[in-house]
Image (cartoon, rainbow, N blue to C red; front, side, top):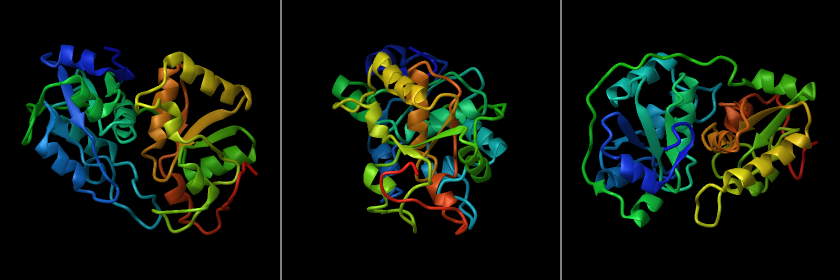
Length: 285
């Protein structure tokens, strides 16, 4: 098991009875916010607890925030404790497959200073293909206490994004699908397009045809090429609401490239201020 990035289904299966292991199911459907919970209760990896994107991994939306603002760190730490996660736990998180939802919780644990967290490569689909142990109903771990150690400097707010782009110091990577980046379609937010200066690298580019992450060497080549084309710039990931952006952060970590940041508010926060510029088409501008 690699405690910090990815774990395969066979590796997890071999560790399933480890008393220090905590598994969290992050399946979620933006079009049906209870679908993940229903799927979890129907069948989940033995022992796993369920994390609801809206209720557990985000704070309530306000007029100034995006669709999934980060929760208060202490409140989230209390949630982790209720799930049975303490500062010594090895955590494994998974979703339906590609890791876009699971990566959010992976990043949030690291945000609070907990590095012993890995995403199940291939998610629940891969687990079932492997013949992994599953159970229905609701699982629990004994409640405990998680001490938050919030990490400074790993997020950027809208003003910092704006300033970094204006100074040509920021490499802003938008992981949304190309039609959304180009402003051709927008299924979730009120305005279509992208932040001027952002480049587009859809998170699916981190995956192979089976929905598992590309090899470390391939990811390293992909991101090194991007960094080499933008020398001296600080990489920062964004998406629609700060969820799938974490997939890019995970991919860079797998690739051995550290220090990338997250714009948690992302596009849905950016457009709450009409004075912030919007671009369409094949920018960066």
